[in-house]
Length: 123
Image (tube, rainbow, N blue to C red; front, top):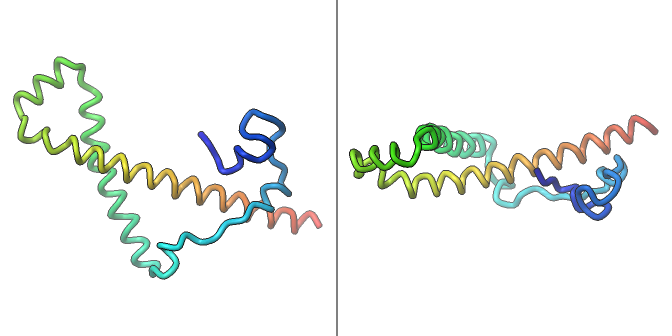
């Protein structure tokens, strides 16, 4: 999995890992779309997106548990039910990508903050 620090010292597997000082020097700003949002609204947004992913994860797991002929038989049997799932899965994939980006960004930001605090304690 890529991290924000893959580019430090030439990228992942292209040299020594980033030092604590290099990580601590990494700059970031808050994400603009969340700056003016209340904590309540941020939590609501997170829960709504998680609910979408949860529902589509159930659908996805059931689909991938079937082989091709089983899935075709199910789709023939319930075409009206399965048809809309294609777009819903596509939207869920977008939500999942956004979650991955937020989680990766949070991981990077926390690593920076920890490196700064640990550097302070070493002084």
